[in-house]
Image 1: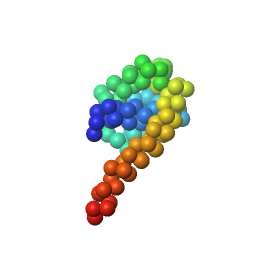
Image 2: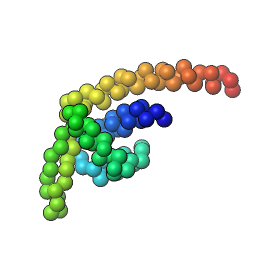
Image 3: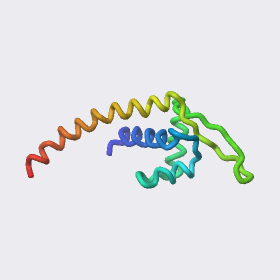
Length: 106
């Protein structure tokens, strides 16, 4: 898969994982596990990129005697999810066009 396309897909997946409530790294990985495999190092790179792009914010809170980072989606992050949904329709149309020959060859 094209690395830029995969990066965009992973970004949106992480945003979707925190869409309804703030979350922390381990829980995000656990929530995404049924859909995609994501290593901690990859996740934290994505989270930093999303924070830099103002698509999420970070806060810390104590949990079990340790500080835990919680990630919150911003309005721009919510907009990015909606933009992705609209873009995905175009991607599906392109896929159907590209796959059309495979279907007629059978």
